[in-house]
Image (cartoon, rainbow, N blue to C red; front, side, top):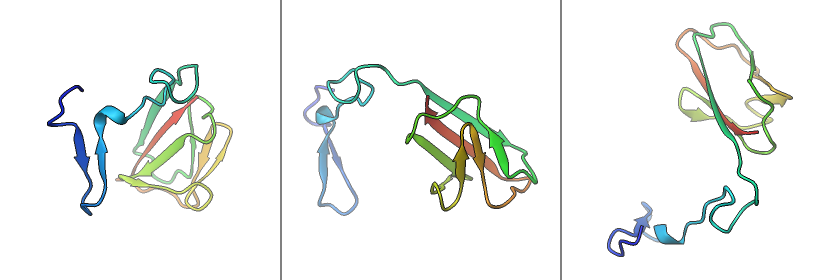
Length: 105
């Protein structure tokens, strides 16, 4: 960082300005967050036609789990449910859908 000219992020509404140099790492390395590093994992499910349940390789550490269907973030409890390492949707996917799960463990 260290570049005072390119240190700002302006949001679309023009009201909020953030300095990149003020952000802290939430992984325990920047003074904020926990003292132990978090393990991030990403899994993508393709060609899952007819499936409603998806088994993750690991059990996500609550509450850090983001589930995206075709680029749209789903809401926990409304669009999907989690039980251990299983993500359950209330509908089945079609052949062109892709499900992306990003989580810590």
